[in-house]
Image (tube, rainbow, N blue to C red; front, top):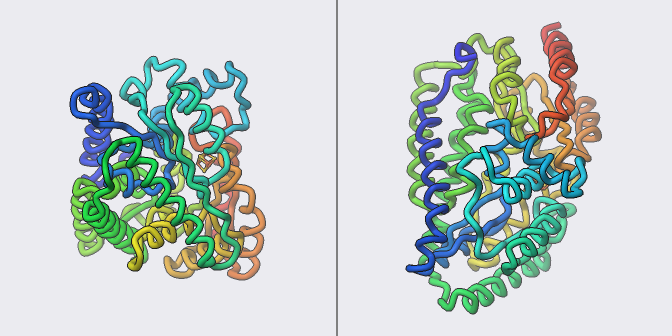
Length: 405
Ligand code: SF4
């Protein structure tokens, strides 16, 4: 597969950043006893800038779930949770996380560090509420919930204000719990770093508008980690500056991400993490490059100007998983048009109902209005029991042959 994928040099640096992040967070509980450092487990849509401004070290069980998926240990961890009564149909990130707590053997970094507190935001799904309630009981630690109303049409001012007020309350609660005041200057600096990082990420994604594309979606999947786990830091900003330069150099030299680029596709949903090379490699071997996707685009949201808490609330409330079918459809439509795609592939992800439920309707409408083919493949992001490779690849083959004709 090495011949079809041209790995970016950034991959190595990204691995180092994630390894350092997880090692550092493992040290926090020990250092915490001396210096008062604390760790917060957070959902991927939590307003992490505020936590960082308090000096909290955020840890993302969802990112850890992705690592477990890519390293093929998720299925075992899911089974640990299922043996305790959790349904096979529940999110495999949640089950992997719970399984890693109950059976932390032979898993990446020997599991996550014990958290001091939990912050959950339901802008991505409702599952996270129950998942984090379980964690709160398991560790007997405080749980902070940010409730974001689902956005139909455009976000209304009252909806953003409702979330902004909760952020202010979160700050008050953290000030009491941590016995320190929020440093607003620090928060502004972190928000600025987040925005700079997001701008670089958008720039990297935009290079794929060129033909041939210098990036494949696997490059984005692999290198998304720092944007999530060290968001709002110089480490993240500097990493994406370097990655931007590398992709720009590829573009200027006319180096394609996929040799002999024939088809340009758009990807929808969380990656099939255990299939990063086999599944996506199958496309690449046939000259199909994924030029963009909805998943890694989910972290391309800036925090705009204006009153700080309102701006943070606006950014986190507007994430695509918290938007209606029209928004999701228009987003995919613009990807297909702007990136000049020949078709799209949707992963109907057993774990993630929030992401997958509306896909068939969106597919139907886009195929009708744009006249481009769309394929749905059934799988799960980390649990390989729910992936029938032969069946899936047969469908992919037929889809690509259809593009050819
Ligand atoms: S159900 Fe979907 S959005 Fe929710 S935690 Fe799982 S993967 Fe994320």
